[in-house]
Length: 124
Image 1: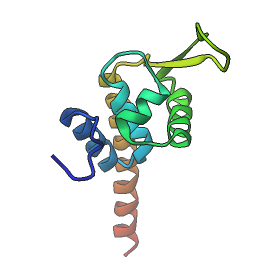
Image 2 (image 1 turned 180 degrees about the horizontal axis):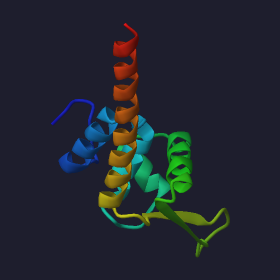
Image 3 (image 1 turned 180 degrees about the vertical axis):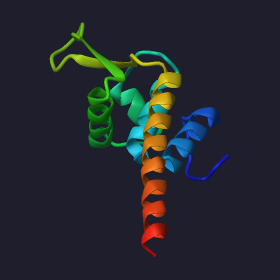
């Protein structure tokens, strides 16, 4: 196992993180996405424990996932005591579809880079 791998994360999940990072996804989003990839509904606290992220990092990652419409949030009132309801998170988009979305974006960016290189060659 890698030294920087969160201790609660399975090897497959961390490999997902590493590959997403190589595709320029920021670390908190990659770790949060990998934590949610199990398919279970989980709390932000469980994501924090699984990924070794701090609460603000999970919140920022969740904002990105919500903006892409990849995650569902459900609030559950606490049965005991006072305080805010507990938020439960679950991927609404299958990981395979998220990967296709990332692939599409990378292909568009790559085409643009190649077009710019070709234009530079013609100008040189």
